[in-house]
Image (cartoon, rainbow, N blue to C red; front, side, top):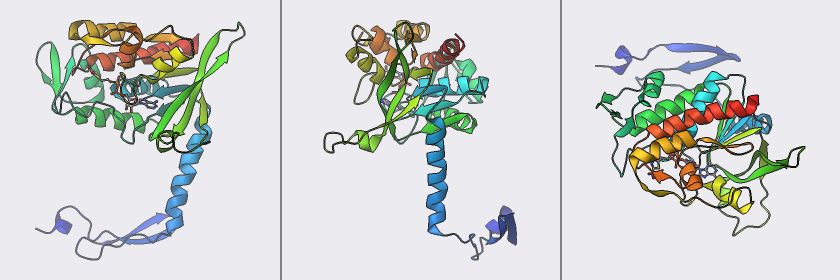
Length: 301
Ligand code: AHZ
């Protein structure tokens, strides 16, 4: 059966954009793209990327880390408050953190109740196993959440971009307050040892939500920096795995840990010295939702 007959229009289409563009969506051998110059492609990207950097240099909320906690926070915050400029900074090329797999290298994702409500809000299908639900593939959850976050007009995501430091201002009482983030492209940040003078850029915001995950090559970033800046006494250090203690501890502990900085997700286990929960993601979703509420509380204070 011919593809043309089934789903593709065989005729030459006239697309009307900036002037008429001759194209043919013809799968019988005469497919013809609109003509283009290479520089148009480069300029189309540059214009948008640097417009975003220009516009987001002052944001309302910066979320550091686009794992399950950061993305849950971004969705909740930006969908409830379309007036806010929510800017997500993610060090990796691929947003999603550890939420592309359920646990070990297995694909199903377990979410304990009552965090399953978020799946219904997103429209992610699952199987009900009583105390918890199972999404057939973690990537279905993460891809759906990511697509809904990115479709929100007030969200900007800068991936392959690392938060290298925090901006700290003194308020009128002399109290230190986190007032934004210091950024660099991750490939630059990874090469500070070999190249000198690669200074960063900044984004100011009245609230930073840090969700950089537990310690590892890049995790627990803000927690560690708060310690070296003297804004927090010391690392709490994540304790061993206990699902029943860990998830409520993370959700109930999600808060503004120092003025201007809300912490959520597994980074909080390093800050507070609470347990890890292993491969169950309800705590990350609920912590992200609570972080959105905390960010609004700080903004509205
Ligand atoms: O790339 C990191 C990841 O995508 C990103 N990140 C880390 N440092 C950063 C920095 N600048 C920008 N300096 C940075 N981005 O943060 C994201 C963290 O995602 P994650 O999935 O690691 O953390 P989470 O808290 O959202 O989810 C934790 C999931 C876990 S870990 C765990 C256990 O080990 O027991 N259990 C669960 C459910």
